[in-house]
Amino acid sequence: MTHDACTLNRNLNPQKPLLICDVDEVVLHFVAPFEDFLTSRKAQLKKQSFKLSGNIIDLPSGKPYSMEESGALIQEFHDISVDQQEVVEGAVQGLEQLSAVYEIVFLTNVAAALTDRRRAHLASVGAPYPVLQNEGSKAEMVHQLSKDLIAPIVFIDDLPPHHHAVKTKEPRVNCIHFMADATFRSIVSFEGEIAKKAENWPEIVDHCEAIARA
Image (cartoon, rainbow, N blue to C red; front, side, top):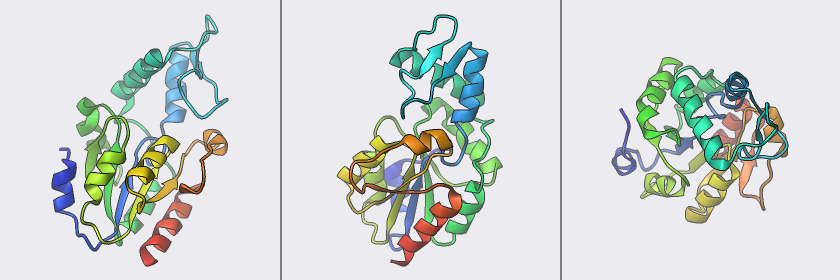
């Protein structure tokens, strides 16, 4: 069961803070199991810059996969693993703690055909919150969810382009950047003060609780 953004927005309490949370590398590990998957395909992920395209190397030839080929590998990985990805440490506990204060919605760019499997997996690990499937920029979905809300809104994601797009479309949204993979997290950069950075879920919880109190 997935949820339309406009329908979900109408069912939100406009005076209760809203937390819009990404899934891959925020709640569920993506990089580590994806690296294992690449090994099975005789490929490797080079963590030399904050991107996947160009960093996935075919080991027999030493050549990088193209953007299209990288996308196909990610799709194949999700087809196999979307309901097997392990939970990021502290994520379920953090979300449960925040659910006392926030409405929580997952916003994921996993393929539409896999959304029900993702929702079921999240529920099975203790995170039974609504799941919205998205493609491309997340700014419009965040805009639709934010309509008529009075209370604070928080957006958590691992990719800087999503934060840039969301802040441009909805400047009032509080952005928090988190990525479970420590190497990629250490090399991410932002222009200006677009997003608060968190190293772990306890820090995310602290940021969110402070925003709700403000």
